[in-house]
Amino acid sequence: MQRRHLLMAGSATLALPVQSPVHALDFVAPHAPAAIRASADRLIDIVVGIRPFRALGPRIEAERIAGKTVVHHYGHGGSGWSLSWGSAQRTLALVQAGGARPGERIAVIGCGAIGLTTARTAQQAGYKVRLYAKDRPPRVHSCAATGLWTPESRIVASAHADGVWTAGWEAMARASFKVHQSYLGLPSGPVEWHDGYVVSDDGFDTPLHGHDDEPDYPDIGDRIADLRPRGKALAPGEHPFRVAHARRFTQLVFNIPAYQRLLLEDFARDGGELVQREFRAPREFARLPEKLIVNCTGDGARTLLADKTLTPVRGQTARLIPQPEVDYALIYRGQNVVVVPRRDGLLVQAMGEHDFGSTDLTPDRALSEAAVQRLAALF
Ligand SMILES: Cc1cc2nc3c(=O)[nH]c(=O)nc-3n(C[C@H](O)[C@H](O)[C@H](O)COP(=O)(O)OP(=O)(O)OC[C@H]3O[C@@H](n4cnc5c(N)ncnc54)[C@H](O)[C@@H]3O)c2cc1C
Image (cartoon, rainbow, N blue to C red; front, side, top):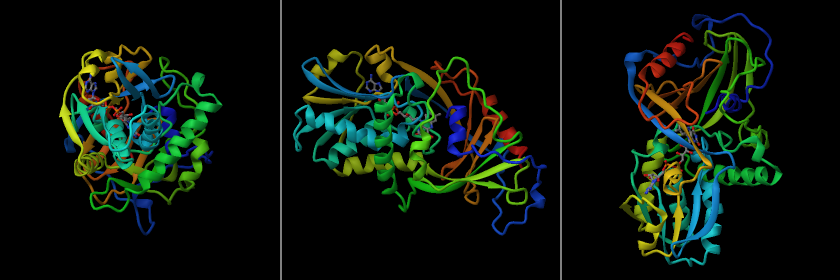
């Protein structure tokens, strides 16, 4: 997430009075949040993924290529998981307008968050679907995601977020949110609600500085503020963290491995086929037996279509050994650390200085270790 978006994730806009730091031992609440065992030797995995950012917002439009109707569906920046279902519903309308009839087989290229949810949405509308992908989970960028409901994260640049665009985004976010709720309460926990804390040494009024090379992003999160409970400012003694300022929020969390696995299983159960195949040029679409193709190649569209409107944004996530007793998310404002209580481990996201425009997939262990160290100082 972009720094400004970390703020939104915790609705941390409230101005808090200056308070003296509280210490873990002073904390006497009946259900004290368990301490995170933040130590670098507990890191079990570090992964890097690319967010496919488009200043114009996601590309959802149809065109004719090599005698086929191709519906493009890519460019979801840091919001792909969050917006996926609503975005797939809008794409389905273009599939239907493209003349494909229910019962017919369509092709979906790409097996990340966008390809899988598009395939499931089309199946539910009565289409047969064959998925083509160079790579499948876990070797897709979607698998590196943090797993928070962040539908406004690097989804558009302010310059392109006019009233019409923003209303369309809001409709997608609301539709997506509704489908995510239908994945609650399942044994593997693909979607869960968790409390979280935004904590800060300096208070929530201090401005955070983004990177100079990034565009300005619009503040659109308020339009869907009603989709989750209001945050609450916490007084010293109401939280155990070694910081002066804290605020509690409640947030939707995606357990990415479980979600992706469930989508793949449901896809196969409904007769979906998955074919491993890389497309090197759009003219290769002509060789597919399907007449209608949905292009969900994410950052892959940058090279496949020579699409210069896509900017890759590198992101790195690491996991600490699972601690089921830690059931809260944590955002350390100003220190660029985010923790998500995922079932496959305590996910720690750290932001690098040169992520925007970077396609470097090499894990930077020092970056994650430094984030864990900053985290340790809180307990
Ligand atoms: C570090 C990080 C943290 C994130 N955190 C969040 C979060 O908390 N919440 C959220 O909502 N979003 C988050 N995101 C964003 C989200 O993960 C992306 O928006 C999403 O991954 C985009 O999905 P996708 O399916 O378009 O692309 P991908 O996951 O990249 O999938 C693309 C698919 O297309 C295939 N493909 C590509 N090119 C070709 C080709 N030429 N031929 C054949 N197949 C091809 C690939 O093999 C793959 O199967 C995060 C992303 C990152 C990197």
